[in-house]
Length: 135
Image (cartoon, rainbow, N blue to C red; front, side, top):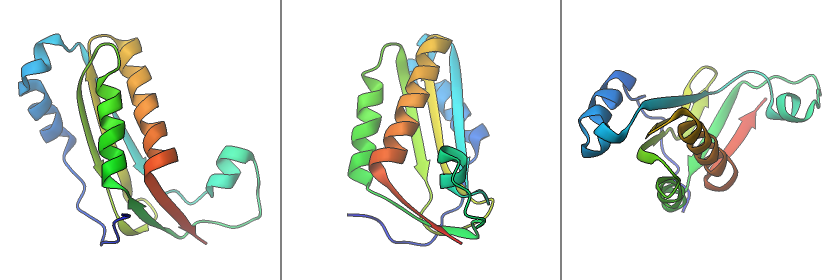
């Protein structure tokens, strides 16, 4: 079921990192990467496909399927060298500049962490969320 709620307060990355570094897995981790997706004015079709119809985004309706997100997180933990994963997703009516998502990945070495971040963000964006741009 897709959540239909009001947008949420964004988390503190300082707090997330503090918590991650106290996790039992922290001694195996050599780096953390954070992804922060935000609502932009440029339409997805223009950025991704080069299609410019002259329109600008004024906001976004955002929802997600929590079970699918949990599955994607579980798949990320199966990746080599990944020991810590945390995801926050906004929901509801979002405005330009609002946070859409935060993803934190902790792992042993840079290539593993980069691959896991790319994998998880792609899974979330392509299989777990609904983004309706408003113009």
